Image 1 (tube, chains in turn brown, red):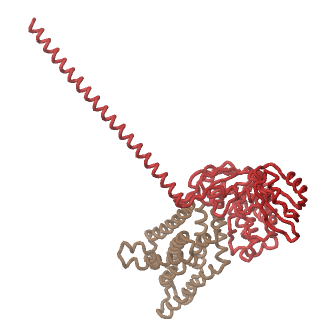
Image 2 (image 1 turned 90 degrees about the vertical axis):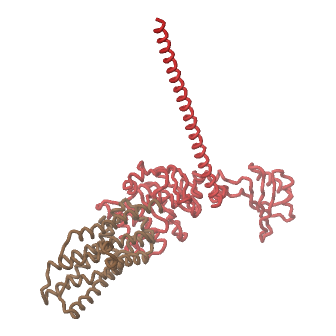
Length: 226
Length: 384
């Protein structure tokens, strides 16, 4: 698994993908940061993430769309599947590599906290719960993006599918309460109030595990129908 | 050793590979021949574990790939068709990644990568990105990825496609050098290549194995002994008349007239005996000078064409019809079986009914007898 994580990280950081992801993320966060401070006169770190969670919808596919689609298109999938590594190791390797890029990006956001604490007194505990919640949310998104990438060899289809489902999640709570339960972005709200609730953590983690499992099943299945 | 036993790969109604059986022994270089779409890559993909067969089993060095995938896959070096490479890695990084994927132990990895680079002659470009390489080099990188870590078995899918003649010769020499330490299965549709490299040839067509033999045997088996090619200097135009003098000759055809007035003919005979001496003496008698005379050349190419073309071509319609007929046959048999079952049940019912009747009658008779006995007793009692 580590060989795959290492290689995937290398691919992210040797190609523009990793930089585009981190750069775009920080650019939009900086705009939010500016608006927060100058428009709303707020020194609220968690508010930044509450707004920022919407951009995950558009930015996570940058990270995930190529994961399996590209391998399938270029045929390097054959090298992976015919190697002695198990499909679970391959899927987890790719997932963790994307998770690491996400974690690096989140570390960069600490600079906003540093700036805020220079001028004011933002709450450290709330900042930590927000960061944890945001990371869990992005892991769930990455898992879904990876799944979308595993079912098609077209990267555009994979990214459109990912964006579509994430956007639908914004509006699920407006349909009715039961649909609302499936809206991850809605669940993130509590974390930004400084609340860590078990039910939300379980939702994020189970969503993540479910789509990792689906990806493994898709790849396993493809062996017999391909 | 690779053993392929009764392997079938089916997509819906289409058979990509149908019930194939073959074996590649240790240290052998075996060629896998077939036209495009004959099922070569499908078979190779099944041997390497990229896809699963619908039926049958594949055993590599004694292990079933289905049951011990890790053990089997670590013994195989696979060079897939179309040389897929990770374009954002350098040659060295790519080969190193392949070594990592194949579980080459960390302490041996550096050396294994170095050896693979040296064997494939990639020293000069080892720090270039794979996407910047020419086709020939890409092919070599893919080959290096397959041989890194010295796997016992090498599966090479069309390794020389798209290379220039010099590169083809180099890759061929490279493959020949594997003979000592590896078992090699190599697919190709270029026959001269196979006859040069391989000790054994497997010919596959439309998903079925047509022949398994050495290239030499295949050539002699399918050789054409009834045709001769001849070039003569025949000023008086008398050559065609020797047909009348030698009864074995069935036909003489003019192929072309050369600038130096010599003529090229093909001679068809009705025997596989050598009649060249006869022709020679006849020509001498008629003052015809023979410049060249030889039997029609037999090659793996002609062997292949003969083997493949003699097979009946089934159109999809025919296949559907055959399948339809098979299904109907099965349905009929099922119906027959059901009918028989029903009849058996009926008979059994009837028998049961008859048995019941007999039993009832027996009972009734017993009752009657009892009654009669009772009456008799009473009568006897009355008499007393």
